[in-house]
Length: 133
Image 1: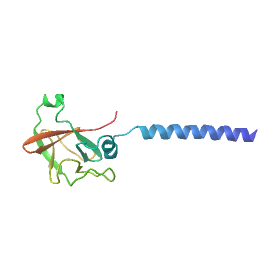
Image 2: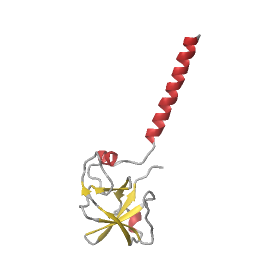
Image 3: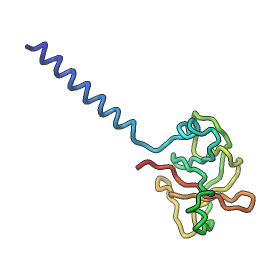
Image 4: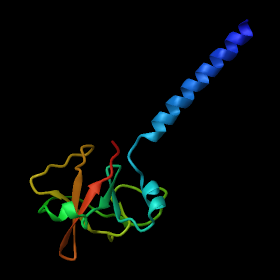
């Protein structure tokens, strides 16, 4: 009887652990590795742990006006490597490119904006945070 109870308890415990681990790994914002694995030509920036994707050519972006606000940093490295992708790294933008928030928007570390802007060759590029949920 004790053996059956032990086996039953072990099975229930394993089920709970498997369900919990499956749920926790399925939810989360995409990483640079995941984005670049799906599209090696992706135009992305990482800021405060979030990946931002260039959405400048999307129709709904063209319908709005975007004005540069405060500078919040600049690209530290241009790279397409999938591992050890860090904040202020970009796949397309060159090192030294300034990153801005929108006009009349405030920036605080760990309260990252949904949209950041970059000026390149006289054109304002719009980057949107890739967030889940």
